Length: 609
Ligand code: M6R
Image (cartoon, rainbow, N blue to C red; front, side):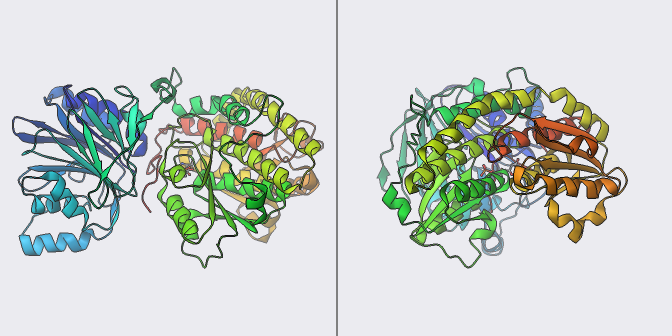
């Protein structure tokens, strides 16, 4: 949940680090800091708050030096203060460290360092122990000291380290937190994610768990956890920085909402032959493989979990395989019925969410086949899966996930159809009909996005509400969950979602005069019943916004506002019905004066448990 960047070369390190950190701020924005080597010593500057605070400090007192490490923090241990910001150093400031992750046994190490070695700690973080521990083991070889120190660490970490006594060397190591190496000409980089270094190089190495990289100006060497040299192929990044920039939009979130027609189209087109048949390259499962599967388990977090709920409905409907869906943080701690007859599907935009990764490993350990829907090529979740279906959404920067979600839904559509094809549970003609409808979706998404002004007005009328309720039945109740998450995440309004039929078992007590209720009613087979639920809340004073299909009847007499979606099959409406809710969350957040792209207490990539 923090961003790490490191540089060694001939450029001014501060500039490279600030540029890199600005690309990583989505990972955490509680504080930022850099450590620069120059004139035989290390200077650290760090500030609580956004990166701009640190940049201001560096503008007034610039730091010269061609080697350095930087960090942007999402606080776990200790409040977001200057003191708790990274880099951390040992007492003599000979060693500087930045860390992403959580050191679970830091209290034991801290106590040992305090009692046995009289070390005085200056922060409340778990990370500071790493600096002292490396210093404790340091005997003129930073790599060896890092290896000895990390051997004592439990938990997850990506760490970058430098020593004032080795001016031509950066060491970085990872376990369960992402880290990449950027390879340049007489300069090298390390970072938590590709955008941080893309201005300087497109050639990267992905580090695997337990690997350590020794960076010099002239080259890098990688070793595994047993100190054996590792040969790694260079991965050439083929997307450019522009796709990770705002390009004139006021916020990444709005840009990403608008990119949905393209992302969904690309995710579909990559999997269709010229004749319009399915061609799922990343999904190598055969008829025999699928015949062995007696259950599908989908695991994910947050928005990706909501995509999993829709995935369940699609796989059960199209392919007739029973599916369970679980949040990743719960999955591992249950009594699991996962074995070699289980198909485990992980869903993750980043591919680095620690809970999802840990669940995937547990499923693999039990013999399940692992398939992933992921947006980031080469991410940890993708690399550890048997099959990967990439969502071609492009980089998603805003903390609130939008285009990743709709492309995940498209990936599930295609996967479920492929399973149906392999199992013979749908006739080819039926599959072709669904594909025909899927092809219309990008234009239909575009059509829904033209309702921006209408939805912005709605936000303007209701942004001051202290609670909002989302209702729906069937897949609409899954999308209600996503609408509610989006709203609470960036507007901070207390919103919640519930299956419409459950209202009268308790929750309806919350409805009072003027309560805003967003009611989805796109599912034909339960349309009348959902209308009844709408009437129930309306009768108790709710202000009802209905989201329905184009040809929906009777609803105008009940709801205060009716949002009509272009006509499609009930199985496909989630890709459209979520859009007005994304826009509502976006405009409400703006009305409330919030930081849309960087909501409080959150970070884009959750790489801690
Ligand atoms: O990268 P992932 O898809 O694994 O992330 C999962 C969640 O952290 C993420 O979807 C989160 O819920 C979003 N901030 C929601 O907008």
